[in-house]
Image 1 (tube, rainbow, N blue to C red):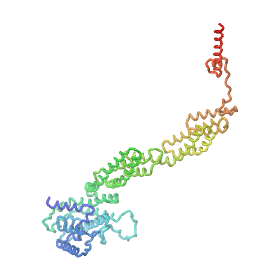
Image 2 (cartoon, rainbow, N blue to C red; image 1 turned 90 degrees about the vertical axis):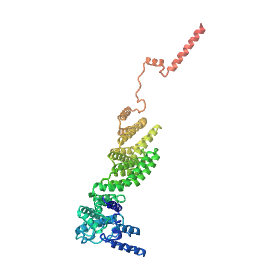
Image 3 (cartoon, rainbow, N blue to C red; image 1 turned 60 degrees about the vertical axis):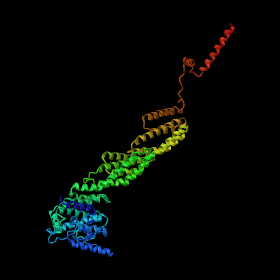
Length: 555
């Protein structure tokens, strides 16, 4: 390819990006694309003279720059116009106006081209923060429907931004233009009209090959700086006609530095969390890591994810998954490891943020399980613990009172806790039924209460009368195990028998023991089992000793 190609490609690189039209030499100088060389020289001299005199030169042309061009910017722009290989590039991306008599183009081609440039320039100006450039009536941009007056008429679409229409118009018309051979015929005509041996039709060949890449670089360049990536992604979809690879490569070039910075931040964060061993260190590291992830990683991941479907080779899915997993780990580290304290609000927020990043299936399940565990812990502390604590406290108090032989006080404590026990059982079947192990815990607590009621009934039986039976009734109401029920039933039978016989439960039940035979008494004495056995054997020993003494001295 001829010597034009390197210079043309260099100028295309200089124009690439959101400043495509702001850097255009014709827009900066206010010169026309069909202006002769001597006209441009006069314009340059006019501006230089005004600058020396300290006089500001007003904006020229239909779409002047949003801000005033500086001396260096003007000098660079005029140098471009003085170089035909560079100038032809800027002509493609600026207004052609009406064709002159020598131009082979149809007027409609020029109109479509200029409308595309106007719309594209206005859209980029709005994104770059310079606001809309001044508009000339009835040219470019979105138009109001016929018959509709400003502020009246049909339904308003408040979600649309003014530049939405410009983006649509620019993408649609550039697509239509680049499908027409007449565009390149016009540029070949301009090569001939410039009549400079430094410029050949090779420049047009390079422009035809590279123009789509330059156009998508304008929207891709905004991807790394926009405050609304989702909206920019919608604009990107309007330029997919340039080729999936073209748009994806342009986006990847802009977003790779952000991707690499997020990867580095994730590595450092993961190492900090892995290096914390004590609970205090884990919470400190998790707090710091969560702040770093929120501020420097999550915004990047969400930005990259907005453009993930445009053919980039960046591992956005893996980045999202790793970020979500680290957020999950921070949430777990920040929550209490036991049921001594409720989960912190920050843990819920971190897990919700992790799920919003749409991690892979395995990571998502892990996060959801931890989220469910925190939900259960929250319900426990909000509803279950306030219901359990007073019951547990009452049962512990009653047990201590029984240990001190204060059965009457224990019975009173249990009686006062009875409504709390009933409420706890109701909650166990209702609001708390979804919590794991709640039903078993309620049953164990109820059975413990039943045993305490039973023990109070036994302790009060000698003088408790019907009160002991009422305590056994309560014990039967709260018992949940077969063993406890059998014990309560046996004690009830004994109390009933004692009441029928007029005896007091807790004595020998009024039943006389059977008489023992003489043989039984003797056996008990012989084996030392009788209470008088020690006396009997002592007398036997004394008599034996006396007998031995008499025999010895009598002989």
